[in-house]
Amino acid sequence: MYNFKLFLLSLTLLLVQSLNAQELKAKVSVNASRIPSTIDKKVFQTLQTALTNFINTRKWTSDVFQPTEKIECNFSLTLTQLIETGVYQASLTIQAARPVYNSSYVSPLVNYQDNDITFKYTEYQPVEFNESNVQGNDPTASNLTAVFAYYVYMILGFDYDSFSARGGDPYFQKAQNIVNSAPEARGITGWKPFDGTRNRYWLMENVTNSRYSLFHDAMYNYYRNGMDKMYDDVNAARRGVLESLQNIDNINAEVPNTMIVQFFFQGKANELVKVFSKANGSDKSRALELLQKLDVSNTALYKQELK
Image (cartoon, rainbow, N blue to C red):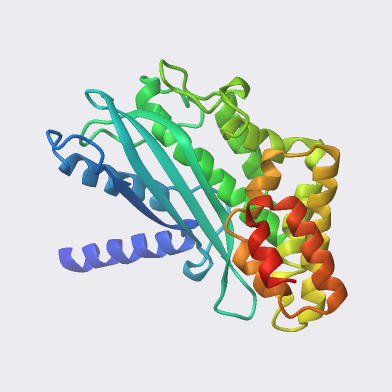
């Protein structure tokens, strides 16, 4: 009887987990090769496991995601310096992809590197995040989970934007709330406007500022009116992507060199080449004109492939 009850309890837990399936399918890696060999590297494996569980087991939205609907993403934390015992400087690479309708292809959604992360961690330290108390009891320890939670909400915002017009607004608001309550301590940067022109503050500011509202149209046009139509009507799909590029160009014309413009194109160059390499003359020419202006770092690639 006891074993049967235990079986029923386990089955119930599995059903509950299925009904409340988490939103992300994240892989987390921690690279500590630059940290002195005197530090026991086992601590970083423990940190990697803790961060993986933190992202993948926490419920980030009120929606139910089926296992096949989970957002595939990667977080690569590279420790660059040991500042003092248990306190590290690090960079974080964030990548996320979105499935394209009627295909096995996944399109880049986020591809960004944050180089300004300072945090404290000791082995088996709880990896926790409280939206009502982002600072926590120790801001330097809380900073790591605040950064990860911020980027989780950014990924969710961009993903929802790509499926429905302005669908990401609630998650960008959550990211904004983290910025407004971000940990403050010696060595912590990236949360303030004066910390630089390309940081967490400015990314949040760009996606929540009505001045850049066309960015959200660009996200929707690129994926729903563009990439998702590639299987059924490639010409209509290209028009959707072109409309997206025009949205971005309109933002750039009003406020040149904003962070969100650069952010949009990171990781998309090869995909854009494939989209327009077989386009008709006028579409290819217009795409080349826009891409050379908006994604300057890949100008040579566009000139070569879309001439």
